[in-house]
Amino acid sequence: MTRDYDDTNIFARILRGEIPCDKVFEDEHVLAFKDIQPRAPVHVLVIPKGRYRSFADFSANASEDEVVALIRAAGRIAKEMGVEDPGYRLLSNVGDDGGQEVPHLHFHIFGGRALGAMLPSAD
Ligand code: 5GP
Image (cartoon, rainbow, N blue to C red; front, side):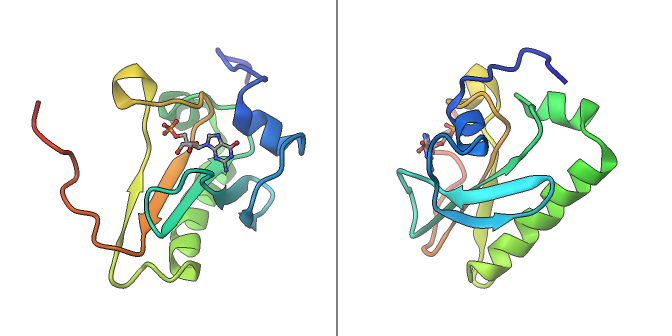
C-alpha cells in the first residue's frame, strides 16, 4: 500500500495527529473534517485512513471494507451536516488536471448555499 504515497502530505499528518483538525466524523477506515479554507457554508473533507494517493489507487487497491466505509460515511456526513435537502456537491479532484493539491485521496462535501454550475466553462 505504498504506491507513490507521500507520508509528509498534510492529510497524512492530520491522520497521525501531528496537525489538528475540526473533526466531524471518524470510524475505523474514515476521517472527515472541516476544510481550513471553506468554499461554502458547509465544506467537509472525507478521507480514507489508508495511504491512498488517488481515486485510481483507492478503487484498485482498497479493501471492500474501506470502499464501503468511505461511501457510507460520505452519505451519512452529508445528512448529519444538514445538506441532504436542499442538496450538496460531492467532489474529488484527482491529479494535475483535476486540480488535486493534497496527494491523499479526499472527497469534498460542499453545501449550505446554491452552488451554481458544475464547472465555470467548457474550456
Ligand atoms: P484539493 O485541491 O486537493 O482537492 O483540496 C485540498 C483541500 O485541503 C483544500 O480545499 C484546502 O483548503 C484543504 N486543506 C489544505 N490544508 C489543510 C489543513 O491543514 N487542514 C484542513 N482542514 N484543510 C486543509
